[in-house]
Length: 115
Length: 118
Image 1 (cartoon, one colour):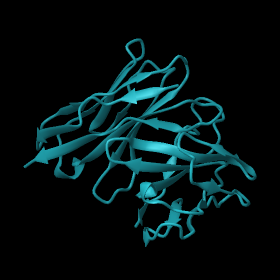
Image 2 (cartoon, each protein chain N blue to C red):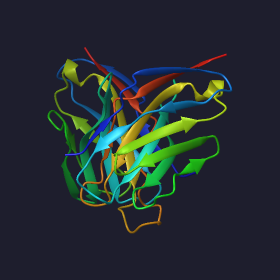
Image 3 (cartoon, rainbow over the protein chains, first blue to last red):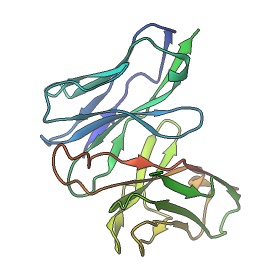
């Protein structure tokens, strides 16, 4: 079974600085998808960024980028120029593209932005 | 607007009183799923459906039922709720995966339902 581990329960960063959230996963499959979801105080689950495992190029969405290391099974999220609105719980998730296409989530990292 | 809706958003009930949380999507998605979120555990899958009349258990199905009679709706039923089912519940949907690069890998979430069972 796949597992996803987020080893940092809480992180904090100064506004306008850069922060990296860590995620590792365990799978025996070669084809899969990885995601970072943001959950602000409203509790809505918002997709931040996605990565296809067959692509070597790291995904980027504006101030958000990932460092995908397939051999190491690592998928970290970098937030540049942190803003107050980035304060939230961040979840890393794994999905395989067949069968029960469920998302397997990590336990989350709570990010605080210091003004 | 493409969206997943859930009702109710908040519910306080008592042990043993049957309840249903509705989920509806307007994106013609085949795949739908229910998750529960508990502190320190992330989100865990309860049940899922690959299409109409096709449902199966996820990781934590005990105490829950689902049905999929229409493509757009996927209600979650708690026939005899207990306090350990107090949680935040999310419905999610997506297209069934087709092929690489088609964008069919992304699940979209409803706003969540906060359930308290006393």
